Amino acid sequence: MVKHKNRLQYFAVLMFSWMQSTPLNMMIMHVIGYYKRKGHIWDKNKNEKLVFDAQSKYQINLIINDLISDIDNILRYKIKNYFQNYYLLVCEKAGKETAGENWAEYVEYGTTDRIIIELQNIGIPRHLSTIIKKDFLEYLTFEDGALVDIDIDNLIKHIDGDKYKEEFKELNAIFV
Image (cartoon, rainbow, N blue to C red):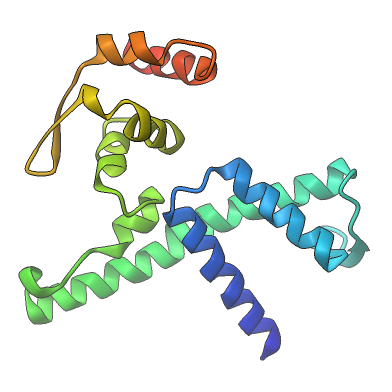
């Protein structure tokens, strides 16, 4: 029972972090910190418990692979589908107007922020969507909550600089 409770707590924290748009690198750092405090890690490949070594590339890769797998396979597939099915059942019974929010969408996109979801819908990655919303919102035009226009020229012009060097390259690759 304790093992299952710990697993549920892990997924609750993971889902909270994911839906708060926490960057993946920060999520990785949190998991590494957890294993440092715990002192050991389970190696599924070798089916054994290992003393955690933060300098071990093998163990760090295990952590990263497990985290990404949990986000993709558990959160963005299993839990998302559970929420989607529940939402569809409520819509069928109570009507779409009273069903509330579709949490499956939030889990899929890793945010509850409609602006970030709108940006992801046009192909901008989550981390870049978060930056655009935070620092460059004035270049987006919305009508009734839907993104209708992006001033791409000004967005690219203003994101160009030392602070957002990699993001500039990524945005350029998307729009130019």
